[in-house]
Image (cartoon, rainbow, N blue to C red; front, side, top):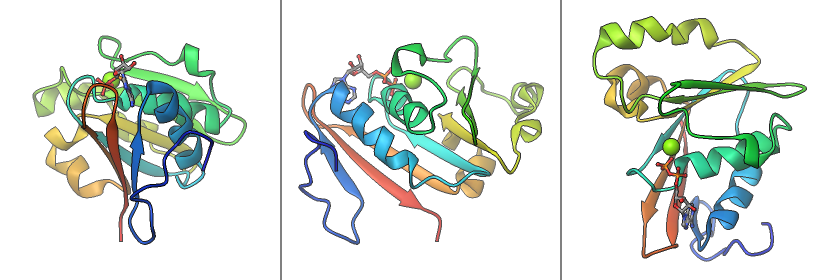
Length: 155
Ligand code: ADP
Ligand code: MG
């Protein structure tokens, strides 16, 4: 683990992490990137402001796809693309997407390739992604700057 990220609650086989600042969450994202496989769908779960986008900053750095500062919320643009040497990340925010029809216009299927990873915020709104996800990262507020982050892999 990187310095600063508490290893409390991290005893195998549990995949729970505590962070105490956005920097620690970005650090954790860098490390979790190593666990994510190309060709997968990752659901990022948690309330508004939980830290989903912050975690993506680290994941993008982990794949050498973007600097943390360059990663911003796709709330309005819906999809951001970050290309690394081996993997292209699509960071998708479905918060404003409510109907199947709106979802279809995003043509997310076209983004799923062996060398891409879809990182989806609010994907659980659609049953399809709730079922299809290969990984799920859930973030819970635990106090002002404290977050509990759970990493799950499809079994
Ligand atoms: P989301 O994408 O889940 O809506 P963001 O990542 O955009 O959330 O925002 C998280 C906010 O919470 C940021 O303002 C960040 O600085 C703040 N924050 C405070 N502590 C943490 C932490 N431990 N992990 C992540 N973000 C944190
Ligand atoms: Mg976000």
